[in-house]
Length: 233
Image (tube, rainbow, N blue to C red):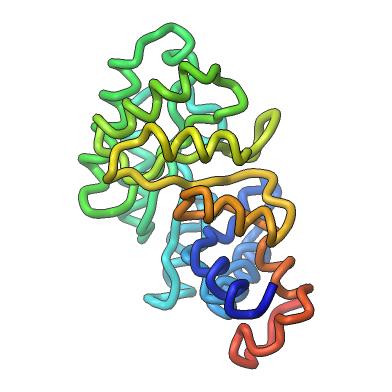
């Protein structure tokens, strides 16, 4: 894979650090890497959004997670989290749906919750995590319809904290069933640059990954990708 292809992949990456033990130094390094490699965003815990925004200024898009990773917070709690994240400087919100409501067949409640958070986000991007590894194929298709109807900007495969992450089959299924205004984010378990390329070719517009930047750095073609900026160790 040549450096032009790698640079293109990086522009679709939400460079992610959501470990429970991540501290500011971890987040700072993530931000430095994202700015050096020109990723789409950094995806970080809500508690570091304000500090990260002050650190990166307008040089990098800041994404954070809501109702993460289980999704069973009340809608009121998710709404509060979303407003606070936006006040702190978040540009994009990745929310986790209530999977119990999906299992109950209460898709009207899921749609109402997504719609309410999108109203709070306004012109900011809202990505909806449906945790595909816990859903049946019928439920995945139904969630494509729900996210489309509710006005979500992206449907996202996974938190990366459950049994499995993104699969080509799920991204292909999304591409067949989401509305034309909904983009796809593949996240969780992207283990190689070739995997990343495959997800993009199948229709993903974003990739949630903590690995792709490291993989790019290790690639033989990496020289020149970050414009000579010395990367943090």
